[in-house]
Structures are given as C-alpha cells and as structure tokens.
Image 1: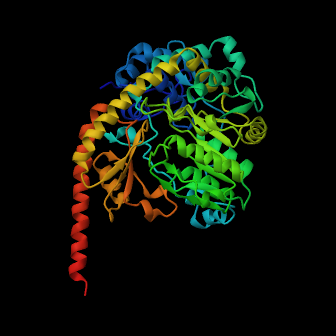
Image 2: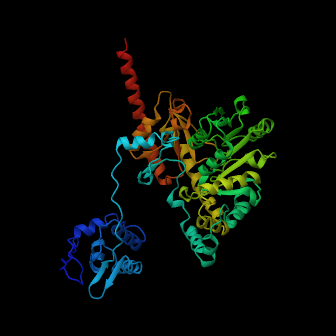
Image 3: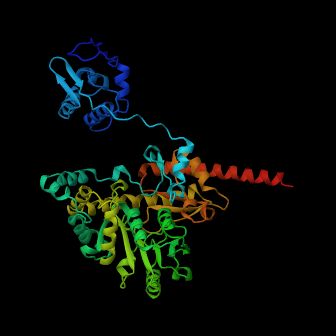
Amino acid sequence: MTKFAPLRRSEAAGPTVPLHDVLFWGSLFDGLDRGGSFLQLQIRQMIVTAIEDGRLPLGVRMPSSRDLAALLKVSRNTIVIAYEQLVDQNFLVSRERSGYFVAGLPKQIGEARQPATEVYSRRWTERFALQPSALRNIVKPLDWQTYPYPFIFGQFDPSLFPTNDWRESARAALSVPEINNWARDMIDGDDPALIEQLQRQVLPRRGIRARADEIMLTIGAQHALYLIAKLFLKPDTPIGMEDPGYPDARNIFGMMTSHVVPLRLDDQGLVPDEAFARCAMAYVTASHQCPTTAAMSRARREEILKVARERDIVLIEDDYESELIPEGSGLPPLMSLDRDQSVLYVGSLSKALAPGLRLGYVVAPAPVIRELRALRRLMLRHPPLNNQRVAALFIGLGHYRSHLQQVGRVLLERAALLDELLPQALPDCSWSRGPGSTSYWITCPAGTDAVKLSEAARAEGVVIEPGDVFSMNAEATRNCFRLGFSSIRTDRIAAGIAKLGEIFAQHVSRRDTCVATAGRSAP
C-alpha cells in the first residue's frame, strides 16, 4: 500500500498537516465507484466536497498524482486531469516542484445548526395549514435496484434505457445554437420543438389532434394533476375518484376539496352510476385502471362521455401507460372520442423512458391551458428547457418510436412468462392484467395481510407493492398487492416468482397457525 511522505512545515510546502496518510485519503475517496464510469469526475467531485465542508483546509498539500493513482487504483492520467481541472476552477493551486495545494474558500459565516428538539419541531407542526407527510402514499425503496427481484411498477430497467440514442440527443442539445434556444427564460412558455413533436409523433399515436395552444408541459403527471386540481377545485367541489385508485391523485384532490367521492369499479373500470353523475369532476384511468389494470371497453367509454355531457362533468383522463406494450385492440383514449371538450388529458414521457426524466403534459381546451400556464408560472415558470430540448430531439430523430418497439417486445415477453409462472407460484390467488399493462393486480385469500407479506418478501430480496394504500378504506384491499415487471430483468423473473411463492406459502401457513391457536384458546 502506498505511503505518503510526511511534510515539513515550510512556506513553500504549506503547513504541516497530519492528513497525508493512507487512512485519511482512503476514507476521503471511500465512495469511489471504481467499476463505474467517469472516474475523473467522481474524484473531482469528492475533492470539491471535501474542500467545501472543511476536511481539506487552505494550504493542505495534495498527494502526488502518482501516489493517489496508486492508492485509488486508477490511471495516473486520470488524477492529472482531475488536478488540472481543479486548478482551472481555483480549488487547487500548483506550485512548481512542490505539488498541488488546496487554494481554500472564503471563511464560512455562522455556526452549524443544532438538531431540532421535539418542542422546536412541534412549534412548526402547529403552524402547518396541512401536513402532506401524514397522507397515505405508495412507498417504494429508493435503493430498489439493489434488490435481486424488484417487482415494482413505474420504474425502469436500466438495460432497456436507450443510452446511446439519449446521449446523441443530449450532445445535439449542447451545440451553441441549441443552447441559445433553451438557455433563455420562456416565462410561462415551453420549448416549441417539443410541443411540435408531441403534436406530430406522440399524440397522434393515441388518436389525439391538438393545437400548440392546447398543450402544456409539466414536471411529470403528478404536477399536471396538482395544477388541474388547484385551478378547478373549490373546498366544496365534488370530484369523483376511482376506488381503489391512484393514491397521489386522491391525496392531491383531498387537499383541495372535502368532497372526494369514491367511485365504483367493475371488470371494465369506472362505472358511470349515480355517484358519478353527481360529481362536478371525475378522475379516470381508462386505458389501464390504476391499480386493477382493467381496460375500459369502447362501449363503456362512450357511456361515460355521454353521462359527462349530460351532467356537465369535467373528466381528468390519466393515460399513464398507454403504449408500452403492443397488445390488445388499442382502444382510443376518452379525449380522442370527446366531441364536447369535456376531457382534460394527462400524459407522460417519463413512463416510456425513465421516471427521473420528469416530463409530463396536459392537453386541454385553449382557455384551460392559458390559465394552467399562468398558474404554473407562479410555481416554477416552466420545466427545464434543456430537458425539453433533449426530449424533442430524441423524438424527432426517430429514437422514441424505435425505443417503444424494443421495450414493447421485451415487456410482452415478460408478461407471457408471468402468465405461465403465476398459477404455479400463487395457486390460491387470483390476478388480473389488462392488455398492454405492465403490472398485475394480485388478490390473495381473505385474511391475508399483504403489508406483512411485502415486508417478509423484501427481507428475502423480493419487492412488491401492498394494495391497501390504493383504497380509501385501507382494509378493502389489504389482501391485494401490485406486481410490476417493467423494472426487473427477464432472466430474474422465474427465480423471483418462485421465491415469492415460497414466502407466500410460509406467510399463509403462519397465518393459519395463528388462527387455529386463537380458536383453541377461545372460551
């Protein structure tokens, strides 16, 4: 292991600092991913962070490029480039025949904040007008990629991400003319190039034709739903919510109005009954009902639009995973059938590419979009234009279409595999998956606690989503869970389902034992 020579205090060499040892420098770069990419960028970032937080104070001499390269097991050229870049940025200074030294930062003002006490925290809690953290939300482990069997919905499989095509689009967006286009402030506008691509290539695939003044970009579908709710809902506005349904939508609506009306479902999704007819607005997932995945028939869609027209109901259509799998008859969304401008359409590019992209959009009548833009301006002006331009180039270069074709083939293969495996692994359960859906809605025998089942499964490396959070009454779907397959590699599915079957059998066995024991002890 490399040893760094101790420093003598001198004006040329800087102060003697007992930091030039292997333990210190090893710990400083402890998080370095040597198997990852961009090692030079990682090293630079770690040095900058150490300077910013004071671990590398002014005047400290850095290890030689040879020594640090040996310690980190990287090429010497990687360290040389990192040091030179940091010199250019004034984080380090180079002294001839002496090495590199920390250039330092201005002295920080103020002292570190102390952890909040319970009394201090309560002081703030009492001032909150609402407490969103107390709402029931879908919970997914942030480190889901570290689990061997992540059967979760709405995440992406890194092996399917079109890395090279996205890089090409990102590089194109970084040309000087493109930067001049997206670096400006659009106030409440969007990138015209992305609006155009939505008009030409994305929306027509769903049978939707819209003018530019009828489309607005958002930071994901949830942002779109929040803006719509803020614009339309008053404290007493009755809005219908599919039950079970999308928790984020339910929570958003519940913060705006006290009249969130649970709407009944059947095997075709939302039922347009009297409860629906009494609503001023209604949230609908027609393509794949969330979470049951039921696909709404053409006749049911026409019926819902008829009732909406007669009762003057505004429909919020969340077309959240409309075209990932080329399966089924490809029924048109409500908006494409709407002749009365009763539908506000919410879509997302994130589901097709990656959730971290955070690009969604709203299609609505021009007067609605005008007000949504004004409202969005008060929140964040517009989504980052650089991301919008990359997405526009990605679609315009034909990558979006080819990506959907590739992903569709893989997801269809996974669905066929799960159709074969589920009856063997979960024979006592029932399940549904609407055509084109990337998840299954699993219903376990009555008395099964899917929350406890999911906890036991996660301990064994299998991640599933308990169903209780989707219902207004958590007990109504406590014996259900959602099983997604967009995030797990195909070659991991068989082993993961077999493991889930074993865990389920053990869970049911323990439950039956507890029930039997309770029965014997009853008077």
